[in-house]
Amino acid sequence: MKPIPQDPTFVARFNARIDRSTGPLGCWEIALAPGEDGYATWSWAGPNGERWKYRAHRLALTLADPPTSDSLYALHECNNRMCCNPTPDAGHLYWGTAADNAADRDHPFRRWQLRNRRIRETGQLDLFAAIRVSVATDLCPRTASSSHRVRSVRSGVSGVERPDHE
Ligand SMILES: [Zn+2]
Image 1 (cartoon, helix red, strand yellow):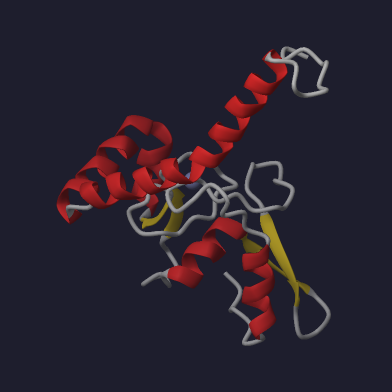
Image 2 (cartoon, rainbow, N blue to C red):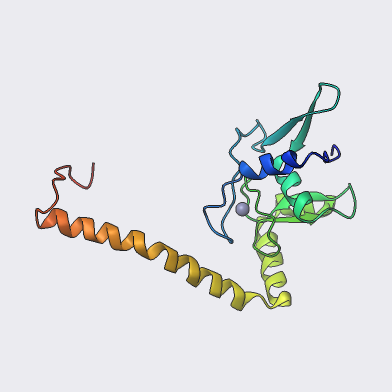
């Protein structure tokens, strides 16, 4: 991978492209068009006018947790190639070897087993449950307003005439 420029706007502009609205455990997709292989490429103007190109998911993981070797692969546990969520043990990106990469591709079930083992070993199951509860709580206002709207329509309070199934 190309070196990461010292220019602080590099990281800021890259981060601004990542949609984190799904919450800490969700897939964070990058707002770039996927390439033919399904992965997004982030490009940056290099010092001599050339474009420096980065695999977006690899760059996201590198910024959060620099690899110990260039031979490591940034792998997706979530199988979403546009995902750039580098949060440790959140089930999205992790560093793996070439063998991990092949095994991951050929045996998706293994990915699930690895994830479960990591969660067990790090004892983060309770933390995950706590985050899910807080995410569910955030959704409450939307649910409330939607049921309120349904009630209003049913009782003829609202002027909305469009049927719900449209
Ligand atoms: Zn993901």
